[in-house]
Length: 280
Image (cartoon, rainbow, N blue to C red; front, side):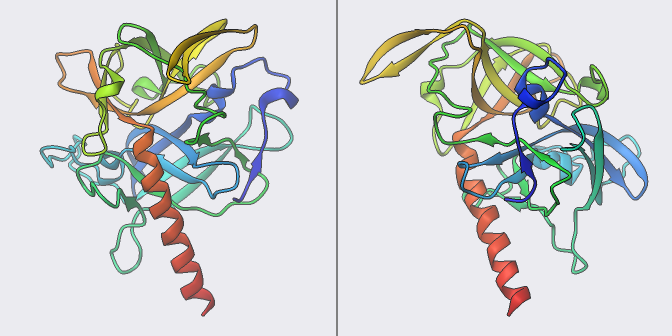
């Protein structure tokens, strides 16, 4: 995995680590910015390669269900700009990286979910960068960003992104907090989507959704519910936000974190296949 992976402990700013994991993106046609959104880095574990994750509709520029063009200009994106945190000298500086969305052959750079395909509003992008970029991925396997927290309907969850393209400072994200509106036990591999009730708005597409707790949380151990009390904050990475069910509702769809594991496998396979072909 390229880049430098660190925690916020070395930095003078007193900010929560999840704030560093949401990346501001500009979705462009040429030099024209069509819209903005959010991306994250994700990896299965600390040993595996990480990839950039965002919504499929962010890179296609089209409504995920209807196929209608999302931009009022009727333009569709051919590149995106990602605002990465610089690893040096300290947090508070950003490095803009422009990524093309299509190869010279016209083939998309992005990787779709290998099972759900275009039905999944999720894509991965492989990228290589140097140690001047701070890599802080969300990890899919347990015990890092997924502590096995039990989250029930009506409990608070946060969408960490950039509503209307705004940020809190520099390119640090806004935390929009709402409530889980769906039994997570009903999420399936065939339909890995759940609902939240949150006043989220446009340009938050691609944002991570987490349950953030500052004093304690519930989990299931050996088939029993237990409570953990700690002075240290904990969070559970739940998934990727992909927008409201319709403009009249505050209900929004979230693609469950489990669905990212297969996508990340596909991204890593794609990267290795192309690397071997280049070196052959």
